[in-house]
Amino acid sequence: GEKPYQCNQCGKSFSQNNTLTNHLMTHTGDKPYQCGNIFSQNTQHIQHLAIHTDTGEKPYNFNHVTHIMEKAYPCSHCDKSFPLKSTLKIHTMIHTGEKPYKCSKCDKAFSQKAHLIIHLMTHTGEKPYQCTKCGKSFSQSNTLIKHLMTHTGEKPY
Image (cartoon, rainbow, N blue to C red):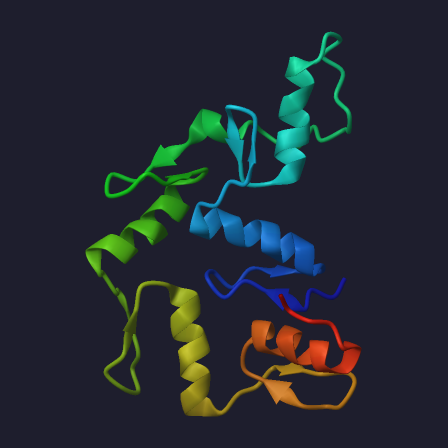
């Protein structure tokens, strides 16, 4: 199926905006769902809550979801933790200032490959994300998403 919602951190695409929003929390370390244990996604929190019930019955069936804190990778520079070692590595570059992804067209460098890919479009003029309502094109999926709200009247915040 079509996946118009792209993560501006790693380039991964999603078919629904709320799935992208949940995914973005893997990069930021935000874990808004908690009960003593902290989770980045509501589905993980719902599954975990089942262990607090008398029957142990899961309120929803999320067998594919794992307990996020079992494999948490804490940042040694701040109080954030990450479910994957790779997301910790990306986050750590905020503290170290490391920018291994260098633009071959100019002197800019980036901590994430996806940011370099987006930047390269400024040199090529590529705008792969097109509005189906008016035909206007954008270099970033999140810019298209914001633009689409001008057609629906929806406020972004």
